[in-house]
Image (cartoon, rainbow, N blue to C red; front, side, top):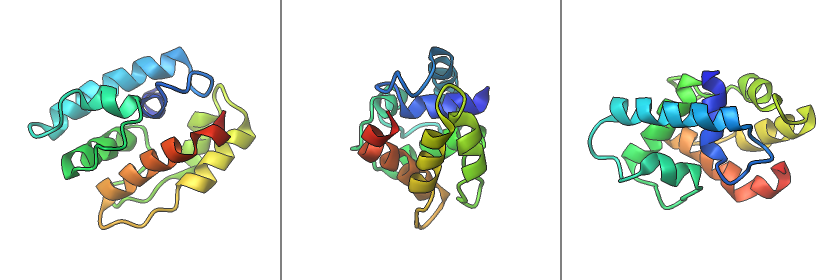
Length: 133
């Protein structure tokens, strides 16, 4: 269930790709990660990420995404993206082919740390979301 939340964070505007339940899970994960990351996050960071706000590129915002993705198993502490988990979670309510396409296209990011890699996953979705619908 937590994995579905993280996925939901990516897709407030992608109703066809994520279920209403996944969106609700995303909201709960947002609250948990805002608390975990603490002060210094931009206002309404969860809402802004769910809406695809790609201007949130500060370190705290990137670590917010790492927190959310980590809680659902999409990324580990070292920043390795778990393609198996992406496919498993995304294929609930979507075709296996779309889930695999997302995992393949959006799991290969270089970055200085896990937060940057998580943010890359987020950006990849929003920059390529048309192929996922």
